[in-house]
Amino acid sequence: MAGVTLVTADTWIINYFASSTDGAIALMTYAKRLFVAPMSMLAQAAGVASMPFFASLWSQNKKYEFATGVADSVSRVACLGLLATSAMVAMAVPLIDLLFTGGRFSAADARVCAAYFSVFSISLFLWSAQAIYSRAFYAAGNTFVPMVAGTIVTVASLPIYAFFYRAYGAMGLAMASDMGIAMQTLLIASLLHKRHMVSLASLDYTEMGRCLLAGLAGGSAVALLAWGFAWTRAHPGAAQWALHTRLADAAILAAGTALWLLLVKAVLEKTGSALPRVTMRRLGLKPR
Image 1 (tube, rainbow, N blue to C red):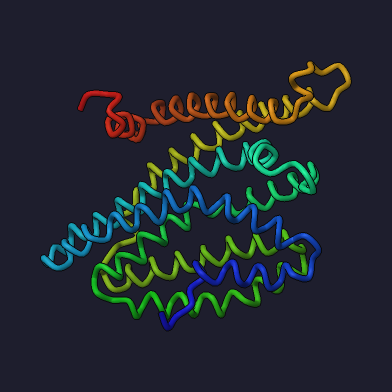
Image 2 (image 1 turned 90 degrees about the horizontal axis):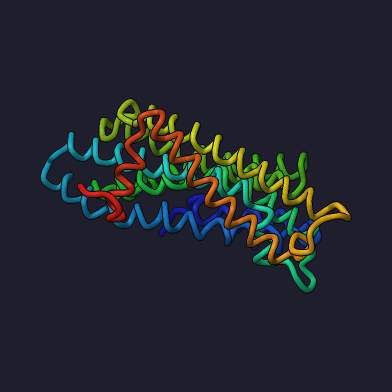
C-alpha cells in the first residue's frame, strides 16, 4: 500500500496531462476501459488464479517447479496476449463505432478513440506478463521488492509521459503508457532472474514467436476485410445494408472474428504450435 505502481498510476498520469487537450480525457477513458476488459480477463484472472499454486510450490521449497511454473504461465499469457492484440487492433474501429457512436460521440470521435485503443492494446502481453511476475514475488512472501520497483518505474516514467505528450499530443500518452508497462515488466522479470527465482531463458520464446506470426497473419487479413467494408460504405453505389452503421459494424465484427479464428488456427497448426490442441481440449471440444 505504501508504493504506487504504474498499474494504478497510469490512468492518473494520463488524465493529468490529457486535461490540457479538449475531449482527450473522455476518449482515452473510453479506450482504456475497453482495453481493461480483456486485460482483466487475461492478466488479472491468470495472476490471481496462479498465485496459490506458486505459493504452495515455494512453501514446499520446490524452487525448480516454482521457476518453471511461473515461466510457463508467463509464456502462455504472453502468447494469448499477442493473439488477442492482433484481433483488437484489426477490429478497433468497428468495435468502438458499434459500442459508442451516437449522440455527441461522432464517427470522428470513434476513429480517434479506436486509435488510442489500438495503441493501448499493443501492450496487452506486457500487462499480462507483469501480473504473473509480480505474483511470483508475492507467492514467495516478498511484497517489498515489487513495490519499490513499481514505484521507481512510476517516478522514472513521468518525464516520458511529459515528453511524448509534448511531442505527439494525447496519442503520445498512450505510447508512453506502453513504454512504462514495458519498463515495469522488464524490471520485475530481471529482478526475479537476478535472484535466481525465475530465469528469463526459460520462457517459451518459440511459442511466442508462433503466436506473433499467427496474430500478424490473422490481424492483417481482418484489417484488409475491414478496409473493404469501409470502402464499400464510402462509395455512392454501396449496398443499403453497408450504409447502416450499426449493421455494418456488426457484420465486420462477425466476419472478422470468424476469419481471424480460422487463420490463426491454421498458422498455429502449420508452425507446430500446441496451443490450438490444448485450447480445444480445455474447452472440451477434443478428447484428451
